[in-house]
Every structure is written in C-alpha cells, then in structure tokens.
Image 1 (cartoon, rainbow, N blue to C red):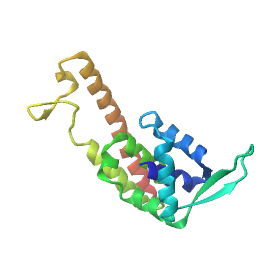
Image 2: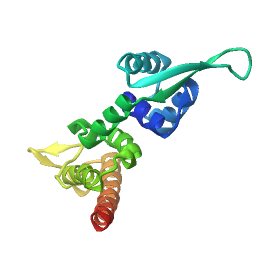
Image 3: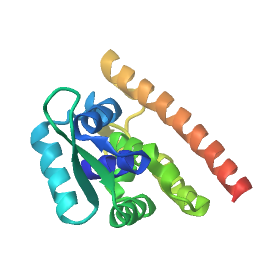
Image 4: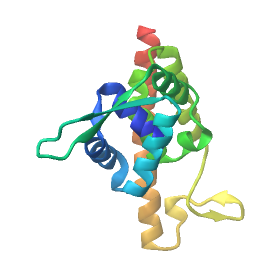
Length: 176
C-alpha cells in the first residue's frame, strides 16, 4: 500500500520526500505509521524500476531536496494496481481507503465501478469479529458490553459504507 500511496500522490503532482511522507501519513499514518526506513527504500525501488523520476532542486535553506515525479511507466503501474486490487486491498478497510483515495485516476468508470462492486460484495457477506459454533456473533448476542460496542459500531459503519457504495455505483452507471 505504501507504493500505491507514493504512485497515487505523485500522479497528482511532483513532490519532495518530506511532502510525500506527510501526505501518506495524513492518509493512513494514524493506523499504519510511515517510517523513513520504509518510505525511502520504496522510493528507491520505484526509481530503479523506472516508475519515478527524481531531480535535485535547491532547498529553502542550503540543503538541496529531491523532487519526485511519476513517469509514464509509474502511471501505468498505478492504473493497473487500481484496476486489479488484491483481495486484501478490498477486504482490509485501511487498504481499501488507500485504493479509494486514488480511484479517480482510473479513467474508465466501468473499471472504477468494478472495484466498488468487489468491496460491496465483500461487505454483504455475513461476518463478525467473534464466532460461536461457526456462526457470526451479532451485537445482540455478544456476552459483554465491550464486544457489543465493537459489533454495533462495525454494523453501523458497514451499513453506511454499503449505502455509499450503492449510491456511487448508481452514479457511475448513470454517467458511464
């Protein structure tokens, strides 16, 4: 997801490393912190693969800064990642939010809709944090206040997301 975030933000505009890190941190850093030890090796891999360009510009003080930009190969990789997200990128909320943050870069509305359909299908499958005799435990069946809270919040969040997904799919199908 780090590489998807790098490619997605650089599809919007060239950035230097610190700006890029701050944007990634704002997107998912509250859940999955971004360390320099992960970010800069990922940038190096993407530059080596020809997906990013980097140039050095004079800094505001004396230190020069590296400015990163997306190449055509990087744009193609971004679009492919958005067209065909891995199953974990559909089922994991934080990963799906990362896909969602950049899905507008995918120019084909039918392909955008297909990604949303996959998420909706996943959310329509009965699930729970807890199971009893192989069946998902609902909030009303939970045996303590705190598990009831987890399940009620998850149900409300899931209902809100399913509603939005249906609305977004209707809009995409209308205009597509």
